[in-house]
Length: 204
Image (tube, rainbow, N blue to C red; front, side, top):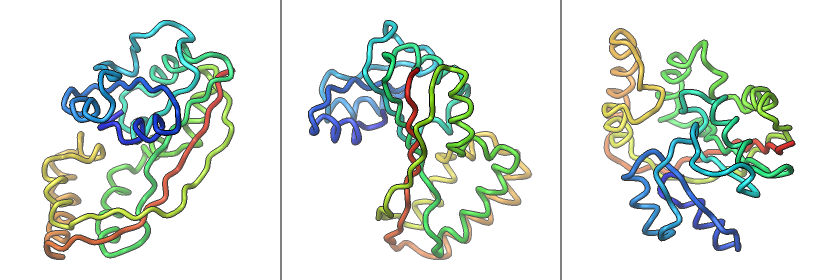
Protein backbone atom coordinates (compact mmCIF):
# COMPACT_ATOMS: atom_id res chain seq x y z
CA UNK A 1 0.00 0.00 0.00
CA UNK A 2 2.81 2.41 0.76
CA UNK A 3 1.53 5.87 1.60
CA UNK A 4 -1.98 5.28 0.24
CA UNK A 5 -1.85 7.48 -2.87
CA UNK A 6 -3.31 4.84 -5.19
CA UNK A 7 -5.84 3.68 -2.61
CA UNK A 8 -7.08 7.23 -2.14
CA UNK A 9 -7.58 7.58 -5.89
CA UNK A 10 -9.55 4.32 -5.99
CA UNK A 11 -11.72 5.45 -3.10
CA UNK A 12 -12.53 8.65 -4.97
CA UNK A 13 -13.87 6.40 -7.73
CA UNK A 14 -16.26 4.77 -5.27
CA UNK A 15 -14.23 1.70 -4.35
CA UNK A 16 -14.02 0.51 -0.74
CA UNK A 17 -10.33 -0.01 0.00
CA UNK A 18 -8.42 -1.84 2.74
CA UNK A 19 -4.65 -1.47 2.65
CA UNK A 20 -1.75 -3.44 4.10
CA UNK A 21 1.98 -2.81 4.35
CA UNK A 22 4.87 -4.20 6.36
CA UNK A 23 6.08 -0.72 7.23
CA UNK A 24 4.34 1.07 10.13
CA UNK A 25 5.96 4.32 8.95
CA UNK A 26 4.33 3.98 5.53
CA UNK A 27 0.98 3.14 7.09
CA UNK A 28 1.10 6.20 9.32
CA UNK A 29 1.16 8.28 6.16
CA UNK A 30 -1.54 6.12 4.56
CA UNK A 31 -3.70 6.54 7.65
CA UNK A 32 -3.64 10.32 7.11
CA UNK A 33 -5.16 9.75 3.66
CA UNK A 34 -7.51 6.85 4.37
CA UNK A 35 -8.25 6.75 8.07
CA UNK A 36 -8.45 3.38 9.88
CA UNK A 37 -8.65 1.32 6.67
CA UNK A 38 -5.01 0.24 6.89
CA UNK A 39 -3.18 -2.45 8.82
CA UNK A 40 0.32 -3.83 9.25
CA UNK A 41 0.52 -7.24 7.57
CA UNK A 42 2.72 -9.47 5.43
CA UNK A 43 1.37 -10.07 1.92
CA UNK A 44 2.68 -13.64 2.15
CA UNK A 45 0.43 -14.30 5.18
CA UNK A 46 -2.69 -12.19 4.86
CA UNK A 47 -4.90 -11.83 7.97
CA UNK A 48 -8.14 -12.19 6.00
CA UNK A 49 -10.58 -15.06 5.38
CA UNK A 50 -10.89 -16.91 2.09
CA UNK A 51 -12.71 -15.11 -0.73
CA UNK A 52 -13.02 -11.91 1.26
CA UNK A 53 -12.26 -9.45 -1.56
CA UNK A 54 -13.55 -8.64 -5.02
CA UNK A 55 -10.22 -7.31 -6.33
CA UNK A 56 -6.67 -6.54 -5.21
CA UNK A 57 -3.80 -4.39 -6.40
CA UNK A 58 -0.06 -4.10 -5.76
CA UNK A 59 1.96 -1.08 -6.83
CA UNK A 60 5.75 -1.37 -6.97
CA UNK A 61 5.71 -4.39 -4.66
CA UNK A 62 6.09 -7.72 -6.43
CA UNK A 63 9.65 -7.14 -7.65
CA UNK A 64 10.80 -6.63 -4.06
CA UNK A 65 9.08 -9.43 -2.11
CA UNK A 66 11.18 -12.43 -1.08
CA UNK A 67 8.65 -15.12 -2.05
CA UNK A 68 6.46 -14.04 -4.94
CA UNK A 69 4.78 -17.44 -5.19
CA UNK A 70 3.63 -17.19 -1.56
CA UNK A 71 2.18 -13.73 -2.15
CA UNK A 72 0.35 -14.88 -5.27
CA UNK A 73 -1.05 -17.87 -3.37
CA UNK A 74 -2.32 -15.65 -0.56
CA UNK A 75 -3.87 -13.08 -2.89
CA UNK A 76 -5.60 -15.88 -4.79
CA UNK A 77 -6.90 -17.29 -1.49
CA UNK A 78 -8.56 -14.05 -0.41
CA UNK A 79 -10.01 -13.19 -3.83
CA UNK A 80 -13.38 -14.37 -5.04
CA UNK A 81 -13.51 -16.29 -8.33
CA UNK A 82 -13.42 -13.77 -11.15
CA UNK A 83 -11.65 -11.24 -8.95
CA UNK A 84 -8.76 -9.37 -10.45
CA UNK A 85 -5.27 -8.75 -9.13
CA UNK A 86 -3.70 -5.69 -10.77
CA UNK A 87 0.08 -5.57 -10.47
CA UNK A 88 1.81 -2.32 -11.36
CA UNK A 89 5.58 -2.22 -11.76
CA UNK A 90 7.62 0.84 -12.53
CA UNK A 91 9.18 0.75 -15.96
CA UNK A 92 12.59 2.28 -16.54
CA UNK A 93 12.55 6.05 -17.06
CA UNK A 94 12.86 7.16 -20.65
CA UNK A 95 16.47 7.80 -21.76
CA UNK A 96 17.99 10.92 -20.24
CA UNK A 97 21.21 11.96 -18.55
CA UNK A 98 20.32 10.30 -15.24
CA UNK A 99 19.11 7.07 -16.85
CA UNK A 100 22.38 6.76 -18.75
CA UNK A 101 24.07 6.61 -15.33
CA UNK A 102 21.62 4.53 -13.29
CA UNK A 103 20.34 2.20 -16.02
CA UNK A 104 23.58 0.30 -16.71
CA UNK A 105 24.25 -0.03 -12.97
CA UNK A 106 20.84 -1.59 -12.33
CA UNK A 107 21.13 -3.85 -15.37
CA UNK A 108 24.48 -5.16 -14.13
CA UNK A 109 23.17 -5.73 -10.60
CA UNK A 110 20.06 -7.52 -11.81
CA UNK A 111 21.83 -9.71 -14.39
CA UNK A 112 20.60 -13.28 -14.01
CA UNK A 113 17.59 -12.18 -11.98
CA UNK A 114 15.75 -10.11 -14.57
CA UNK A 115 12.53 -12.10 -14.15
CA UNK A 116 11.77 -10.30 -10.89
CA UNK A 117 10.96 -7.20 -12.95
CA UNK A 118 9.36 -9.11 -15.83
CA UNK A 119 5.53 -9.08 -15.80
CA UNK A 120 5.43 -12.01 -18.22
CA UNK A 121 7.46 -14.12 -15.80
CA UNK A 122 5.11 -13.11 -12.99
CA UNK A 123 2.09 -14.03 -15.11
CA UNK A 124 3.56 -17.49 -15.68
CA UNK A 125 4.24 -17.91 -11.96
CA UNK A 126 0.68 -16.79 -11.14
CA UNK A 127 -0.84 -19.61 -13.20
CA UNK A 128 0.16 -22.12 -10.50
CA UNK A 129 -1.77 -20.10 -7.89
CA UNK A 130 -5.03 -20.14 -9.80
CA UNK A 131 -4.73 -16.99 -11.88
CA UNK A 132 -5.19 -16.39 -15.58
CA UNK A 133 -3.36 -13.49 -17.19
CA UNK A 134 -5.62 -10.99 -18.93
CA UNK A 135 -2.65 -9.19 -20.42
CA UNK A 136 0.08 -6.66 -19.81
CA UNK A 137 -0.43 -2.98 -20.52
CA UNK A 138 1.92 -0.04 -20.78
CA UNK A 139 0.82 3.27 -19.30
CA UNK A 140 1.23 6.64 -20.93
CA UNK A 141 4.50 8.45 -20.17
CA UNK A 142 4.07 10.09 -16.77
CA UNK A 143 6.26 12.96 -15.57
CA UNK A 144 8.03 12.87 -12.21
CA UNK A 145 10.73 15.02 -10.66
CA UNK A 146 14.08 13.81 -9.33
CA UNK A 147 17.20 15.56 -8.15
CA UNK A 148 20.46 13.75 -9.08
CA UNK A 149 22.06 14.43 -5.70
CA UNK A 150 18.96 13.21 -3.82
CA UNK A 151 18.95 10.01 -5.92
CA UNK A 152 22.63 9.47 -5.07
CA UNK A 153 21.82 9.99 -1.39
CA UNK A 154 18.97 7.45 -1.63
CA UNK A 155 21.36 4.97 -3.23
CA UNK A 156 23.83 5.52 -0.38
CA UNK A 157 21.02 4.59 2.04
CA UNK A 158 20.31 1.50 -0.13
CA UNK A 159 16.76 2.65 -0.70
CA UNK A 160 16.66 0.88 -4.07
CA UNK A 161 15.63 -2.77 -3.66
CA UNK A 162 18.36 -3.70 -6.16
CA UNK A 163 20.93 -2.48 -3.60
CA UNK A 164 19.74 -4.50 -0.64
CA UNK A 165 22.06 -7.45 -1.22
CA UNK A 166 24.95 -6.14 -3.30
CA UNK A 167 28.42 -7.41 -2.51
CA UNK A 168 31.24 -5.13 -1.39
CA UNK A 169 32.84 -5.60 -4.81
CA UNK A 170 29.63 -4.63 -6.64
CA UNK A 171 29.31 -1.60 -4.40
CA UNK A 172 32.81 -0.40 -5.25
CA UNK A 173 32.70 -1.21 -8.96
CA UNK A 174 29.12 -0.31 -9.84
CA UNK A 175 27.33 1.71 -7.19
CA UNK A 176 30.00 4.15 -6.05
CA UNK A 177 30.83 5.32 -9.61
CA UNK A 178 27.12 5.81 -10.35
CA UNK A 179 26.64 7.86 -7.16
CA UNK A 180 29.66 9.99 -8.03
CA UNK A 181 28.37 10.60 -11.56
CA UNK A 182 24.95 11.61 -10.25
CA UNK A 183 26.46 14.03 -7.75
CA UNK A 184 28.58 15.52 -10.53
CA UNK A 185 25.34 16.56 -12.27
CA UNK A 186 24.66 18.88 -9.34
CA UNK A 187 21.62 19.61 -7.24
CA UNK A 188 19.02 20.46 -9.85
CA UNK A 189 15.55 18.85 -9.93
CA UNK A 190 14.78 17.41 -13.34
CA UNK A 191 11.49 16.39 -14.93
CA UNK A 192 11.69 12.82 -16.16
CA UNK A 193 9.25 10.48 -17.90
CA UNK A 194 8.36 6.90 -17.00
CA UNK A 195 5.78 4.39 -18.25
CA UNK A 196 4.21 1.94 -15.82
CA UNK A 197 3.83 -1.73 -16.74
CA UNK A 198 0.51 -3.18 -15.60
CA UNK A 199 -0.28 -6.88 -15.37
CA UNK A 200 -3.93 -7.89 -14.87
CA UNK A 201 -4.58 -11.33 -13.38
CA UNK A 202 -7.99 -12.95 -12.94
CA UNK A 203 -8.77 -15.49 -10.21
CA UNK A 204 -10.08 -18.68 -11.76
